[in-house]
Length: 291
Image 1 (tube, rainbow, N blue to C red):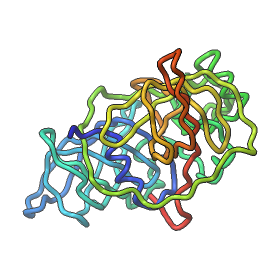
Image 2 (image 1 turned 180 degrees about the horizontal axis):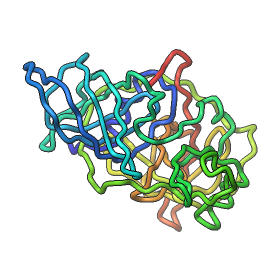
Image 3 (image 1 turned 135 degrees about the vertical axis):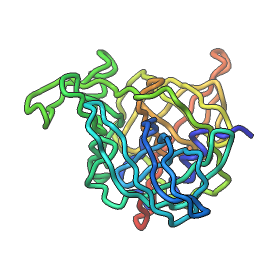
């Protein structure tokens, strides 16, 4: 079975989540000692990033608990560095080994991305990684109805930029590198609780969404409406009721897309269109988890 980013995401979700995880490629350098005790300096790149860690790929064999120095040059050519600890080896393939790592001091902001507190996302309709068109500051944005409609119409957002100190135009952040990783895991997902959205206001929006299901190719679908508790979408594939998948909405290929877990609550065939309409509820991780 081919290894995919969604498989890596399933492993990452087994930890305790303290921030959103962004599917984003950043080139960096890893420095440390390998499993045999030999010092090394090796290129690496991220597959997923969060405030507190990452899933990354490098060619060196490491053991759980080993410490690394990670460093990278940001877009202003400034060197950023931080220490990290290997949590687990997720997979290995022809490109190297895939590891989950935790940052020793997340305040260093190694990824140059601002992550808002997760509690601010309780009533959000969508989330995306955006960057200021003036200073290129990147942040995870939680979109309300007005912002979602603005992005749907203009593919950009008007937001206040703390760095510029003025209102600015934000666009969806693009990856720094086209490098991709093939990753795989067979770890089971942690139990999760569903918060239904039947009594929440739904907002009509025809924007792209991306559906990830472990062991299958990603599917780009059309989102019909969203609420803070869930969404509905049309797709070519049928997902059985109760199926757990991940969705990124809004979705733009090659951008920093944010995937979150959902569970299918209904599936309806649309014979004349050759499609299926699905309703899904967002899944909230147990309160005692972090990542």
